[in-house]
Amino acid sequence: MGERDKKVQFGAWIGIIGNLMLAVIKGITGIAADSRALVADALHSASDVVSSIAVLVGVRAAQQPPDDDHPYGHGKAETVTAIIVAVLLFVVGFEIAVGAVQSMFTELSVPGVWALYAIVFSIVLKEMMFRYKLFLGKKYHSEALKADAWHHRSDVFSSVAVLIGVGAALGGAALNIPGAVYMDPAASIVVAFLILRMGWKLGSEAVHISLDHVLHEEETTSLWRKAEEINGVMQVDELLARELGHYVIVDIKVSVDPLITVEEGHAIGKKVKQELMTFTFVEDVRVHINPYSEEE
Ligand SMILES: [Zn+2]
Image (tube, rainbow, N blue to C red; front, side, top):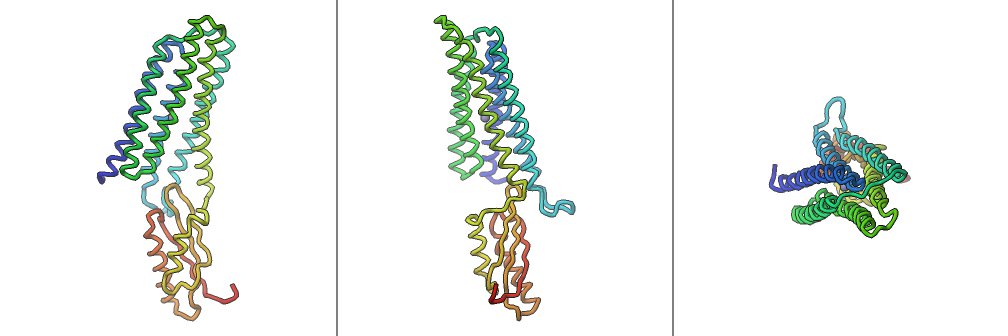
């Protein structure tokens, strides 16, 4: 493993360990301090741990080389894990929201003041994780790390919502404002919404890819141009890049001089495959040769 891969993996583990720690601290404090919002935020951190681990497992499974049963490779393993995690996020988000609404019809107690300490700690740690991972992502040009970093930043907002909810419940109780205690479950609904949104984003993208989505025209122009430049290719008739997780399989139809030999045509096809395989995101290329004709 190279220096860059090591650093990128290190960044991923920092996220997992940091979130695990936060889930435990906020979970225990949330239960002890009787704060629904803090418990919801702990569940959010726990969901982040589960989805990060699922991503690691999915990426590893997707790297398996093609075999007899899976000639197109295992790229969709990544998509399958994403769908499983999305379903999990929906369940967690829904549970929190329902629990919060139900609690509003019961007698609520004012959350303990330690809930505030835990949430401030969470905000500070998350902001540090955001800055560190953004720094790593920029330094090593890793889109995955940068995306991860921005997720930490969105977690900061989730925790700020909790801070406002718990703070309002505590402050309201101190000032004898009736109903202020309901700000705590109200904040947990905000957290639930953020978890549901995360599930929706992840799930809709994974479903999109799993339905044999092909790259859009503007994403394939570089492939198209490369094929057109090859000696003997008179015209590219069709180019489809099917997305399978993190790579694509290209189906290309090219027109060649109808009077050349089969062997020459085959050589051109081979060259097309070779050239397109130089793109790192291309896993395989299937070439179909057409005889060139004026009318088409
Ligand atoms: Zn999160």
